[in-house]
Image 1 (cartoon, rainbow, N blue to C red):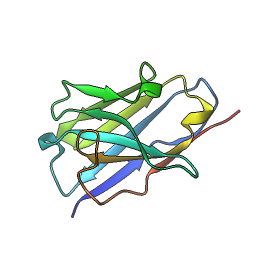
Image 2 (spheres, helix red, strand yellow):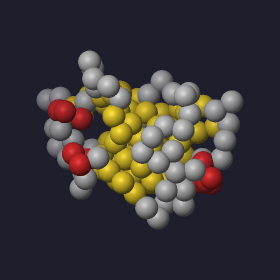
Image 3 (cartoon, rainbow, N blue to C red):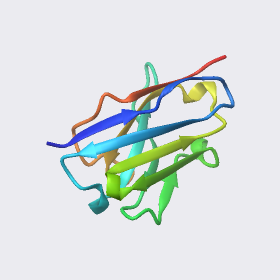
Length: 118
């Protein structure tokens, strides 16, 4: 059974940093690209970043370029999202899924809440 468990969110001031983790189970992530998504209140889920199966290629939404870094540790079946220079508009619930720029699985984790506020 495919499962995603996101963690690392919290309350941070504008300009601050957070590192999110996504532990996957039920499949081996080394066989797949992986992506992070986010959903802000009242908005649709949107793509944040993607990383290829062995981490050579990455892709970011325009508003995240230069601030966010996606990485992966296949041996731990885990994907990370380092978020720097956070802005209020980054406030959202963050999720991960397999796939390059579109989710491979219908299953989603509970996500991790990121709140950027002073």
